[in-house]
Every structure is written in structure tokens, then in C-alpha cells.
Image 1 (cartoon, rainbow, N blue to C red):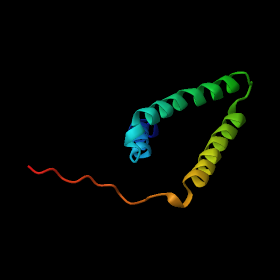
Image 2 (image 1 turned 90 degrees about the horizontal axis):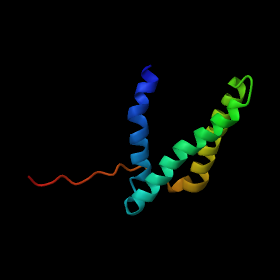
Image 3 (image 1 turned 120 degrees about the vertical axis):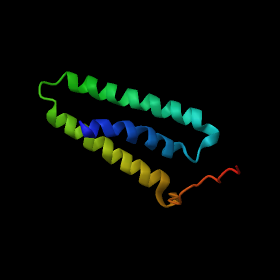
Length: 93
């Protein structure tokens, strides 16, 4: 139960971090993230629904999605990954 409860903190913050440097297209980026969060599980569920024993195919899908995410991150971001923390300037009171 704790893992599922933690997703409520991880997913919104992960999306925020992903869009942090793209404020000018944040609406488009948010729409794309939201669409992919519904489309990919729907496709996977449809595929797994026709199988008698979906345990191994589900593990393969999880591994495949993880491998694709790593591949996309390495090829698209690579050494351009900016790990510096972006801090907002404090407002004058």
C-alpha cells in the first residue's frame, strides 16, 4: 500500500521536473505526458487481456518500457543533461 500511495507524490513531481525547463511549451508537454500515460497502459492491457497467463508478458512489457525510457534518455539528452538545481529568486517582502 505504501508504494501505491507514494505514486501520488512521485508522478506529479516527475512531470513537473520533466517540464521545468520548457515553460514556453508547458501546455503541449503536459498534454503529451497525459496522453501517453493513458495510451501506453491501454495498449498493454489490451495485449495482456488476450493471454491466458499474463505474468511473463507483463514482466517483458515492464522491462521493455524501462529499456526504451533509458535509451531515449541517453540518445536524446545524453551529456546535455543539466543537473544544476534551478532556484527561484526570493520575493521581497
